[in-house]
Amino acid sequence: MNRLMLLAAAATLAAVPAMAADAPQRGGTITTVLSADIRSTNPGVDRDGATDIVHQHIVEGLVGFREDLEVGPMLAERWDVSPDGRTYTFHLRRGVRFQNGAVMTSAEVKWSWDRLMDPATKWRCRDVYTGDNGLKVQSVTMPDPDTVVYALNRADAGFLYNLARMDCGGTPVLHPSSVKQDGSWDKPVGTGPFILSDWRPGQYIELTRFDGYTPRDDAMSGYVGRKEVYVDKVRFAIMPDAAAKLTALQAGALDTAPLESQDRIQLQGNPNLTVESAVTPGWEALILQSEDPVLQDKRVRQAIVMALDRAAIAEAVTFGGSKFSATPVPAFSPYHSQAQTDALPYDPERAKALLAEAGYKGQRIVMTANKRYAEMYDCAVLMQDMLRSAGLNVDLEVLEWTAQLDAYTTGKFQTQSFSYSPRLDPLGQWERIIGPQPRKIWKDPRAIDLLARANATTDRAQMQSVLDQIGRLFTEEAPAASLYLHASDYAVARRVQGFKVWPADAPRYWNVWLAK
Image (cartoon, rainbow, N blue to C red; front, side):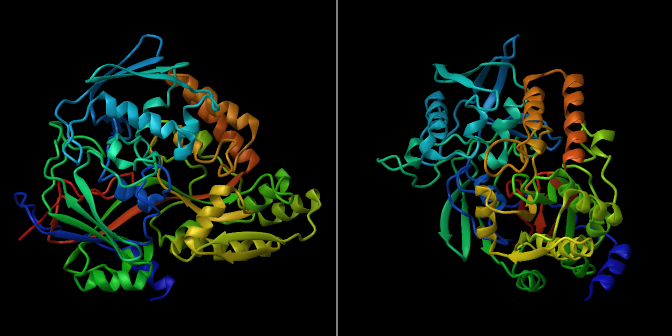
């Protein structure tokens, strides 16, 4: 089916009524799919979006994100904040057990924090707390087995948000048996509702219900609240090939599967499947290495942005599922404003004029993409054509996804057609790209200072003002060409009950069961 036919189908796509929910039933295995294998079993260290999905079933942190994008308690029963905003006292839930049977206390929380902050661990989010970006956790103490106290150098609006971040592993609380005697990583021994029971690289990851899991009493919301596990196992099959995934879905070999935009259209009318959807803060963009000799001239970056018909790209690549977004901040964010809506216009002639002003003489620009994730590649193909039409000498480099991600992480690229996994907090939506680290594309000291100011305030009006300044500077400096925010689409077999999508774009297999 070609793109025009699929777009026409999208316009007439009608929802099929879901099977009426029965009372939860226990037993069985849910088979789902990942487009790429997990990178490791070490939460928040060697990871990507697919890896995070698996880890969040195994480990938990003190807090987590709710479905309203605010932070709620998980392993903490509650917390108190000192009047000056610099001391957080977490009161732990009692009776929580690790997957080896040991009872969680403040000692394991402290041990986990110390391990994460050890440079040798290479935790992705260590630099958030070292003072390099303003915030420093000065101490973590244990007044008693049920209490942990974090002392900060200043009040910080992002502290709880950062503890909850999925790309940080949710700041996991692990049992010390997760590492070997020499301190090297072994396997995750967490408090989550599932245990990692089998990993066959390139084939599948299998999780088994943790029968000793201690659920909370409050209602499930996002990654917090009550987690009841009804199924015996969840198997994540590794299927890089989109056509094979669709075939498996239609044959009944998969119970759930994430969908590319065109898949959603092709599955319409299938009586055995429903499609669940939600808008997310996952961000698609052409990211630009501003320190590159060719791209360090702002006029060249602005020309790249203005040469792209970004609304048309979003419409075509997502088959109408997503709309152009001027910045990474979603419209449903409480901090979305006009500053997050204004954008450089689509103006190829102005783009050509800017290139002439900058003295651009046809130097080669490499755009990196991959075919593992179809939307990244489709965006790249459309963007290459538009950029060449404006006089930019853009070559497309197609790598394996792991190689592209490694290039991104080390900052060794010129441009990339890139997808960012969702960041639910308002500061994190910018933190993904602002900072001095190699993977951060926007190293402008002004942007770094503004983000630090936003983090340093807990006043809503002040934070809005600073975030608006970041939005306006983003448009002016053009460190990336923002394309659109992802929709999370999941195909769900009708026998699967209780499955819900949410803005995190991450499936959850607790409180889910198989109808018999």
